[in-house]
Structure formats: structure tokens, C-alpha cells
Image (cartoon, rainbow, N blue to C red; front, side, top):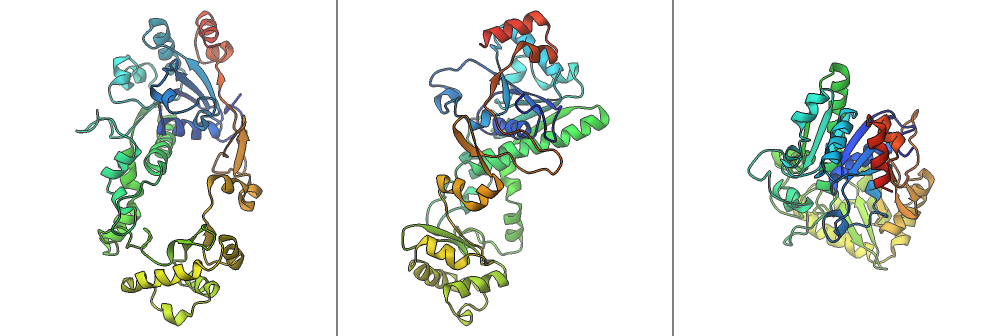
Length: 382
């Protein structure tokens, strides 16, 4: 059974009310590690919601699930959803505040019938506050947290870092973290609770190191002129002769020394690397040197060193890098290349990723539905 055998979360039952982006990522992380995730999906609406953005046959975020399609406007299906919530340890939903309450599936109702339930809610703005009912996406939550302002070139506009921050780290991963924390408490005390995961707050939290540097007076209000935003000449990207790029992260003195050695630059010319006034001209000097050779040539120069110089690979190149190949960092499931489950565990290896499958009657019965209803719902999903 996908996600149900092996892995440190084996035996954990998660009921997911399918949504977009971060909530499916959080559920995927749990499923990857062995949780049995039953995803309640509604029939696709052409051109709307996920159906307007993703091909469900290639949606990596849906992996390792059992899928049950319910129309929650029908009393039969709504009662089935409530019964499934009674048999779950964790419920995940990613709708706007109030949607689940209007369906009679809010935390008050679910916790009344299942007091040990961890009820996890994934939103952009949180369950309360002036923006709680407003729509938004990764870019909006990141912008309001103050972090998007810090990303980009000096004098340029803020640069969108894909949707890795709010949807990814501040959303799905924070949700999974909150679920496991609340689950630990529920298993110890028998008391479930609501996990209110808001991407805006997650973005601010992920920026804790930046807040530290700002408090120390080491982070300006500007863009692209700080230690970790490309301002430092020893922490950024450089173009090579063939149009490729390398990433440089030589912060510590010993790494900085190896960087200069590989570039053939005299250490005396780069004394006091923290002298910000000299960063622009030093960055230009490094840029001229990196532009004299190809990306591969520089990889060969810095191979086996701790100069913290790596090629900037595209998505297809990354899958073929020897390190990723050696560790099996990427896999292919159903003809779709994707990242393998992470992190690794020494004693409880999870199963390989699999495409989602329809929930059958036996699984629904095991979750607590009566046989007649389970068989009817299983047939309707075929």
C-alpha cells in the first residue's frame, strides 16, 4: 500500500482534504515517511483550482496517497467524511477560514467526536486577523513578511525565489513539523488540538538569521549589499565563459583562502573580507576571472577543495550529478522524475514513491465505514 508500509510514520492515519500547494506538500512529506494518507478530492472542475494548473497524472505532490472522491454537498458523502475523520489521527485541510466549518467538518465538530485528533490547517494569513479571508499566494506571503524585499540585485526590483519559501519551507514543511509536534502531545496526553499554520508567519520565522544580522547592525535595509544576498563578493554567483554559472559560498577564512588560490588571486589584495566598501570592486575582479573559463573548467579547478564553489545546474542536470546519483537523490515514478523522500533514516526506510491510487472498499472499511457505504464510494471512484 503506498505510504502505508515501512518508514518511521508507519501506522499513522492522515485524512487530507485536498487543496493546492503547501497542504499537499505537507501531506506528501508524511506519506513519504510511511503514513497512510487518504486524500479526499472533489471531482475535477475544468479550468478551475488544481485542474487549471496541474496535470493530476504528473503531480508529484499527490504521490503515496489513496484517493477518495467525495461531493461534500451530498449528505451521504459528507457523512462519510465525518466518519473518516473519526478514524484518523491527523486531519489536514488547506482552505480559507470558515470553509470546513460551513461543511460541518470544522475542528470543533471533529474534535468532539475524536478528541485525540490533530487538526492541521494550512493558510496564507492564518485563521484570524485582518487578512485571514483574503486570497494570496507564495509571493504575497513572502512580500508581507519583509523577506521578499531583501532578495534581488542592488538597485533592482525584488526577485521571486520560485515558490520555495512560503509554499515550501514556510508552508508544507512547517505544517508537517506542527503536525508531528501536536501528534507527540496527543499520543502522550490523549488531547488533540488545532495546528494553525500560516505561511506569512512561517516566512518571518525562516528569516530568523536575517533578523539576527539586522539586530547586530550587519544587515542594511538595502537589497543585494549584504552577506547572504549576493552583496558579498565571496557569496554569490558568477558567469563563466560558456554562459554557465558557478555559485560561490566561501564565507569562512579557510574557505576564502582556497577560493583565492583556485582563482590565482593574491591573498594580500583581499585582506579583511568583511570590508563592505571593497565588496563591489572585488566582486568585479572575481567576475573578470570567472569569465575566462567555462563552468566545467572551474569545476575541475575546485574539485576536491573546500572553496565552496559549485556549478549552478538546471533541473535536468541536477538529476545526473554524480553525488545525487550516488545517493539516489532523485527517482522516477510513473515516468515522472522527482526528488526522493528525505530525510534518510537508519532503521526505518520508507517505500519508494508511487503514484496515487483509488481507495478500495477494504481500506474504507478499515477506516471505519460500513461495508455498504464503503463499496458504494469505491465503485463511484472507479
